[in-house]
Image 1 (cartoon, rainbow, N blue to C red):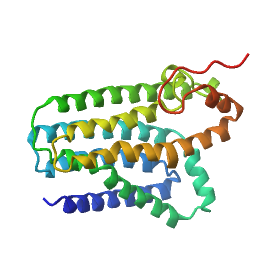
Image 2 (cartoon, rainbow, N blue to C red; image 1 turned 60 degrees about the horizontal axis):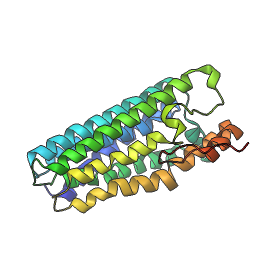
Image 3 (cartoon, one colour; image 1 turned 180 degrees about the vertical axis):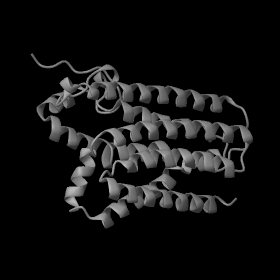
Image 4 (cartoon, rainbow, N blue to C red; image 1 turned 45 degrees about the vertical axis):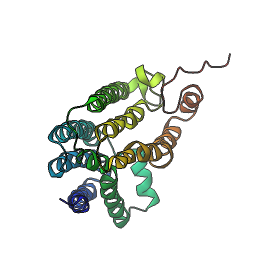
Length: 260
């Protein structure tokens, strides 16, 4: 199938899913569902493009399994938060800033559908790889495994910290969070290099770089770290400012010693 047609089909499916998500948000007053849908939709796009691609069977099977499992794990993790907690402060602030405009929320949800297509470009490249088994496939699988394990550990450490009422108003510095203010984001970013490796040999392998490059831009300057840290400063104040001074922003590193 023509890759443009594949992307058009993906966009239609993603737009429909996000429309249903917007309706759910409208009735439940919780826009956090968009994050779970984005992760699930992206995992589903890996499976879809692997099925539609014309590359060798092995990289397509690997793509479907790895991309599908990654998306499912992240979507379930985010869904548990949406179902069990009040609306995330980021979306509460958007709701207040937009005066509750459902038209703006609808546009926001549809923008996430476009982002699914953008972030699916590495999957499109990998699904057209004519090579079968090779060392780069193994490297990609290893990167995927390390990054998903790392992100899962970071998510569990944060969830355990937040579940303790004694930690309300405090900043998590347990485990991986001692070495990075956003270890979950770090491993999320590293995860995208797996598809760069899987796509090596594809005639459109260069598209796979859209994953780590665009993800870093979004995490660093647009929707990830800026929004998260603004909300953290709003809710935790000086405690989080001290954390910012001592701890690496994204790439894990040893914390700085506090001044005597």
